[in-house]
Each structure stands twice: as C-alpha cells, then as structure tokens.
Length: 182
Ligand SMILES: O=P(O)(O)OC[C@H]1O[C@@H](O)[C@H](O)[C@@H](O)[C@@H]1O
Image (cartoon, rainbow, N blue to C red):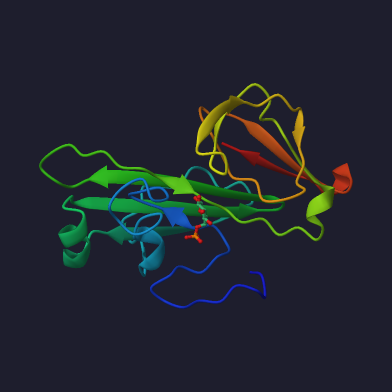
C-alpha cells in the first residue's frame, strides 16, 4: 500500500486489489465501483472443494447481500473469492451465485494497483490491436497501435475484449517484470 493512501470512509482506500461489484466505475446508480469493496467479507465455511494443492496456500472469502445492500441493489447474491498464493504467483478466482428468484446482471472487475518505483520506466505489453475507450478524451474509441504503452502523464483507457491475455508490466529491465493473466 502506498504511503500516500489513506482510508477515510465511506471512500474506499486506494491500493491493493479493489473488488468492483456489482458496478464498475460510475456506470450505474451505486457508489463508485459498487459496494463490495467497502464491506467486511467473511471466511467461506462452505467453499467448494479445492483442486489438488500445488505448493499453494488458499483462503476462501464470501460476501452475501445484506438488507442494506438490497435497499440499494435489490438482488440476492453470494460473491465468493478464492485467493491462492504460491511462489511468485497470486491467483484470484471470483464467483457470483444468484440466490434470488429471478435473473440479474452485474458488473465485476478486479481493479488492481501495482507498485512501481519509477513510472517512466514502465511498459505495458500485450494490448496491441485491442479497442479501447479513452476516458480523458470524452470516452472516444481507438484501436491500440503501440506494441508497448509507456506513461508520461495520466492514462485512463478501458480496453474491450481483454480476456485470455497475458499482459506484461515491465519496469526497468525484464527481470523485474510481472505478468497479468486474464
Ligand atoms: O479512487 P477509486 O474510487 O478507487 O477509483 C479509481 C479510478 O477508477 C477508475 O475506474 C476511474 O475511471 C478513475 O477516475 C478513478 O480514479
């Protein structure tokens, strides 16, 4: 967590991996990025069986709709998050269960912060040819042309169809790189 982050409820702290649910950003009537990141989650006592452990430690968390949530968003849900850690790898597996008596749609995102020592040395690879909306340019749509994105100011792009991607964040040299798989 950055030393510049401070937590002043009801605003969420900026850092870690905020879980955006059931709304992303301000694309709805709820608070920014939905309420899930501002709730206390519980340990999931009823988690589905684990796949064979491969040198990894796992914790299962759950968030269930409360009466307060239902007033703002009238759907019955269970949101589960399995967090697994093994050497050099962090895996998060979210699952949403509808416990309502009707179908509902929702938005979900893991909006992770990454700590870098010098932003001018960072390159993000793996987004070439994807379409994106540039939120600093009136949400205009563009197609990514660059084989690597670098940063000399604020960048706020929302990429579409960024699934099954292996995005590399390179800071300085390749031995410092991280891969993000979606
Ligand atoms: O500060 P928050 O609520 O965690 O949001 C972080 C960012 O989330 C993005 O989705 C918004 O487009 C940004 O404007 C915002 O700064």
